[in-house]
Amino acid sequence: MGKAVNKMKVGLEDIIQSIYLLPQEVLEDVLAQFQHLEYPKNYFLLKPGKPCKHLWFMTNGAVRYFYTNDQGKEMNTWFSLDTQIITDAPSLVNQTLAQESIQLIEDSEIHAIEYTSIQTLLQKHHSFALWYIKLVEMHYIAQIEDRLSDLQFLDATQRYQKLLNLYPDITNRISLGNIASYLNITQETLSRIRSGKL
Amino acid sequence: MGKAVNKMKVGLEDIIQSIYLLPQEVLEDVLAQFQHLEYPKNYFLLKPGKPCKHLWFMTNGAVRYFYTNDQGKEMNTWFSLDTQIITDAPSLVNQTLAQESIQLIEDSEIHAIEYTSIQTLLQKHHSFALWYIKLVEMHYIAQIEDRLSDLQFLDATQRYQKLLNLYPDITNRISLGNIASYLNITQETLSRIRSGKL
DNA sequence: ACCCCTTTTTGTTCTAAGTCAAAAGCTTTC
DNA sequence: GAAAGCTTTTGACTTAGAACAAAAAGGGGT
Image (cartoon, rainbow over all chains, first blue to last red; front, side, top):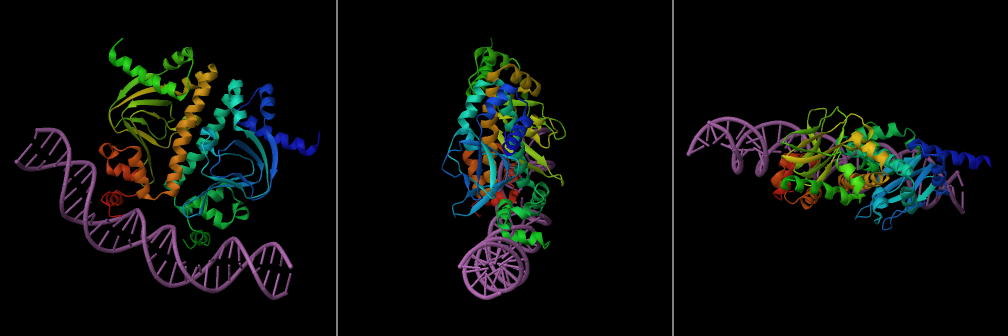
């Protein structure tokens, strides 16, 4: 077995097992459903108007989530860097048409599992259902609620500080315009926050 | 069996079965874990600093969710009226201390199940795990994501219209101050929106 | 019917952040 | 290494909604 492949396999396995420990036989069944892919910067994992058919486990890279509003302006709602689970939850769970886009902002390494495979695994393995519950609880609930209370209670400066805290190297990897859009402020305002004029 | 009790049982059963159909034997095991309670207006289901130990199924009544900020100001984050599932998701799933309060704003009829009972049922019944997945997906993900995109993309007037649309009778049941707090605007501004001056 | 207390409305002033515009810095690329 | 393109910064002006203040309107309880 080649060194590179081995390293990648371990990355995915680690993420899966850190969520909830699966019996070896179930783990193997689960791993077999994943496809390992590499996509270039700017590639779209998801575009609005299509149902989200995958859950993606990124082991390396960076993505942004964004909506395009009526005036055609793109508004970022989230960034995921390095080792992260990626999907459009509302579209995935209801298999409704996505409203948001998910786009790579760096060349990225991704492991994909299809929605239909997840459904099959849920029915087949009780332990996989327990794993999936942990995934949803930890990944969505924690992340979304956190973001919600930020939007509600913090001003732009505080939200920027928090983002810097979460991803200290974010300014080297994501443009000011993209970060401003995530903070829901203009890039002029973010520039002024950065230079300490606000 | 009394008429009133029968009616209530059916209400709870309906909610449970509408989420995901459980085998009769599992349903009975689940129903047996619920406690039926009636609480008066202003009662607190949850206060900050305590872990959320229950999932509540309200069959009648109204609650508000709110945070208290550093200046002691209460900020509403959600309302649930009539038939709704109620809990503090982040606190429940991680059994961490709650940051928010959940308070009744009308006399309410509630069916409560404990977190520990849910854990036991999840391990015991594969079908209950599948039921719980649907609950989390439908209840949390749909609701929270919806709220998140509202906060991000709609201004106060649009958010107010949407709330009126969801709960047309809300103005008769919830005070202007409480609604303004939910919309994250002052009550003066909401009063002006209502009278069409904004 | 009156008083007390809470909720809602109205008026004025103030401020954080947006908009528009232009300059300054960086980076590709030929 | 100059031109062309982005990205970021700076400046001037505008605006939505906050803050403060005070008046008006409801709504029970005695």
